Image (cartoon, rainbow, N blue to C red):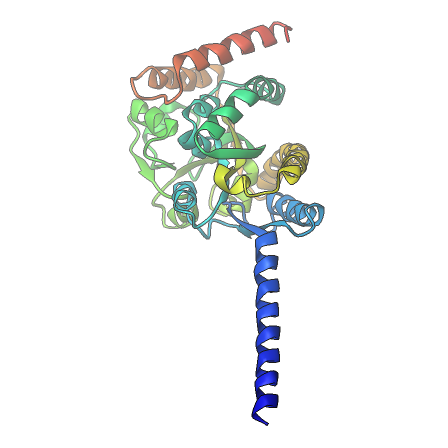
Length: 340
């Protein structure tokens, strides 16, 4: 009797061990990458990321998948960067501002009035792509693909047509170290720093009167429900990208790495087209909701440009090198003359 009981226990122990081993092997085969993003659920961005996740999971036969934290639930970009460094997440969708924390030269794309059209953006990014990728990789990150939010506009609860108007307003600033903060300081504006998730409350409580964002951003973040005016001057292009820690990406089996990179860039390229169309449509939606378009005169636009140039001339206002700035400006000059 004891012998039979012992045999049963041995058999049960073997089954438990077998199950445990299968579980461990299965866990080793599946790499789950945690990704943070400010994009809200239901946005075109999140729809693309969810599609990407499904595709990557399928193409890698469940060996790689992403767990996504949308809508800023992990905090602002700086919070996500910190969480990436300590390993709480391994991947993040960042604007050029966030990417420039990882590789400072990317900050050159955030210069106000640098680009006049999306064609200029696309051509310049193609020119700088390999340089930016290498810089990120040297600092421990792999770029999964480029993305964009579009051109930023001033939006406000009071009409803003000139630098003088800006000086009278309570202006939001995203980051105390950003170029926007430098420009506002040059104008003598008292800027109010808030994280992106806190801006809507800031508008509701009248803590801030002026914000800035791409039109789609203002809608998805619900800022448009509180603003009354949009200043029709594209201030700066906001690009971005998806990055993953290099040490994590190296855990992906070598044959699967190019498959993942190809999937991401393909879908993000398609998303750019969607984003550009949605930004145009977003302005129409805002107008239908009673938001008035403020069109500054040429002289007033030049005031903004002069202010930006002065601010950019201050020591420490730029994190990128003079060499990279000259390379970008030279390329744009040739491109605008019809050169390639």
